[in-house]
Image (cartoon, rainbow, N blue to C red; front, side, top):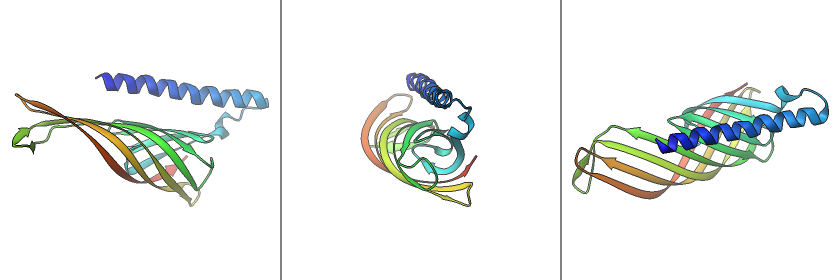
Amino acid sequence: MKIKNILIVGLFIILGFFVSASFDSAYAEGTSKTRDAWGGGVHAGFSPYLGLIGLELQQTNFALTIGLPASIGVRYYFDPSGTQWFLGTHVLHYDIEEDKTKDGVRYTEQKATLLGMGVGYKWRFRERWDLTLSLSLAHEKKKLKNSTASRTDDTVLSLPGITIGYVF
């Protein structure tokens, strides 16, 4: 429950930054370019930034990603339009009720949180579509539970990602 609260607070802080930066640049130029400064898209596939399905909101070089299962990330694009390289950081959380045996003990519930960072490349094609490939390193803290026992494992994982998205 604590992770969810941290993610929600972080989301509002980051969204506040994007909105503030967008309005500041629009007022500084004396025009209302807020709509032009924003971009976004809906993505499907697998990515530690977006989960299995997610939304990306981009303002100039920075993007906020939100997806399911519970994932949130921030990306920095070297070129704010079209085909481009990016660096990013992300948090991904999942809960699974599934039997898993580890060291002879059967566990019925898994909860994991991954915190990581990585690099990726986004190809834009047909003006409204993009294909994104990424590779991240993440620290995973996984808790396995059953009715009588629990166990916590810490590991470092490499997470590949591939998504296809529609840009609006």
